Length: 190
Picture: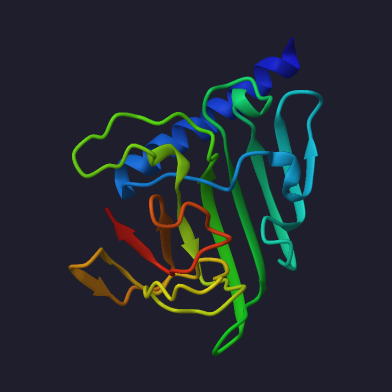
């Protein structure tokens, strides 16, 4: 019983954080869906709650830590799931150097909500956070159409209207719901 209460409390916290981030940045999450597929994840009992330690979502971070919660469609106890992970590693691409990230990313199996103004219907399936960690080619806001890597920030804007050079901010939803596998860097709406 205590385990279930703790699990539900953790899930509620992540769900609330995902909802809060989605309202601010018009996105909130999409790492795929099963927390058990994240490198270094260990389930806490049979709760659908996983602790992440090791190389994390990218499988290549020098150090990563976080928590991931499966939603009910993936064997969890709550309707909204996702992961919150922070990590560090040397970054790929031009310039190299140290890379760090902290990203909240929701399950691609989270429920689809009705649209509210510019906020898209898949808002709980996107991601938001900060990052300069790159596993592919840094492209600072340009959708390179390439295989991509992690979103390392570098630009924010309104799609097709304006792009501003702003480091670290990352988000994605409709054009790139997965932080660790994206052909665009930065954060754009809608």
